[in-house]
Image (tube, rainbow, N blue to C red; front, side):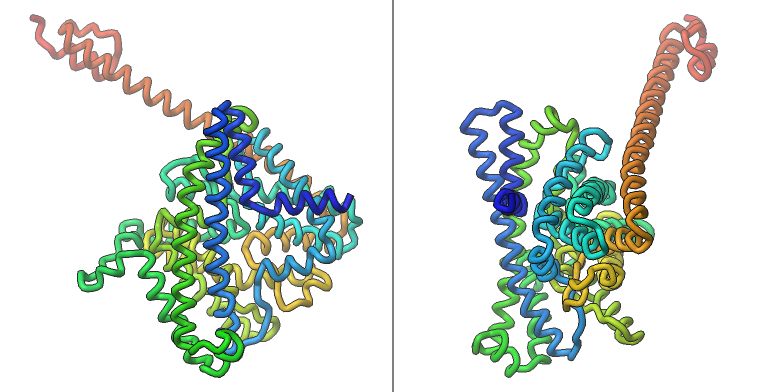
Length: 495
C-alpha cells in the first residue's frame, strides 16, 4: 500500500508530469494523429520543465539573499517557506497528505464537472503543500488518519476549485480572454491586489508605458531592467552584510561583490527562462485542453502556476515583487514594535505572489494599482502565517511556516473550526460544499439574465431599425412598428 502511495505521490507532485498527462488526454480525446499527439504532449511536458528550471534558478538566487538579509539587519524569526515546512510535514504525515492530495484532485474535477466553476487546478506542487497543511492541522488536533483523508480531500477540492475563481475576473483583464486561470496558493492575496487596484488605482498609467529616456534605452529590455535592479539590491545588502560573512558562509570564497553581481544575473536569467517556458506551455496546453473541455468537463479552464501571467506585463513583475517585499518589511517592523513572533519576509514567496499581484494590480489600476496591490499582498503574507502557527502542533515550533495567502485563510478557518470540535470541521466543510453549488446556481442565473438582456437589446435595436426603414421607405406613415419610426414616417410627404 505504501509503495503505491509513494508512486502516486511521485507522479502527481510533479506538475510537469500532470501538464504532460493533461495534454496527452486532451489530444487523444480530440483524436489527433499520433505525430501531433506525441509532439503536443512532449512540448507541454518539456515546456513546463523549462518553466520549472527557471523557477529553480530564481529560487537558488534568492535563498542566500534571505540568509544575507537576516544577518545584515540582525533579524531572527519565522521564515515563511513552503518547501522547508512541507519537508518536515511529509516526514510525519506523508501517507495522509498523499491521499488528501489525490482525492482532492478528484473532488476538484467533479466540482468542475457539475458546477459552473470550471477550473482544473494543475499546479500540483502547491496543491501538495496545501494537502500537507490540511493533514497536519487535522491529525495534530485529534482526527484519525481516515477521517483526515475524507474531510481533508473535500476541503482540498473546495479550495482548489474556488481559489482560481477568485482571480478569474482579473485574469480576463490581463489575458483579454477567458481560456486560462491562475492556480496558486497565493490567489487570495493576488485577488485582493486586483480589488485594491480597482478602487485605488488609475488604469490610464500602465507599468508597461513607463517613459524611459533615450540615453537609458537599454532599460527597455525586461531582462536588463531586472538584472540592473536586482544588482543594486544585492550589492547594497552585500555591503551591509560584509565581505567576511558573505565569503565564509555564502560565496564559497568568491569575492563578495562579484558574487552579488553573479546572483543578480542568475535571478534575471531565471526570469528569462520562466518566460520562455510559459510561452511553450500556453501554446500547447490551451489547444490540448480543448479535448477535455469537449468530452469530460465542458468549458473547463486549466488553472496554471503564477508565472503564466508574467509575459503579459513584464515591468509589473519587478515592480510587484519589490512592492510586496516592502510590504513584508513594513509588516515585520510592526511585529518587531509590538513584540511576539516575527515573520521575516520570505523572498521566494514575495517574488512569486508579489509579481503576480503586480500584474493583476496593473490590469485593474495601472502603476498605482500594481504598487499598492502588491504591497497589500506583502502585508497579507506577513500577518496571515501568524494565524496558522497555533494549529500546526509540533510542526508549528519550527522556524518556518506556510507562506502564501491561501494557506493563511484556509488554515485559519480549518484550525478555528477544529478548536470548536470535530463536528464544527465537518459542518464547515459541508457548508462550504453547499455554498459552491449555491454559488454556481446563482452565477448561472446571473449569466442567463445577462444573456437574455443582451438578446432583448439586440431585438430592440433590430425593431427600431426596421421601423425607421419602413417609415422612410413607404412614406405612408403606416410602418409595422410604433414610436419613433411611425412618427417620422407620418411626417414624410406622400409622393
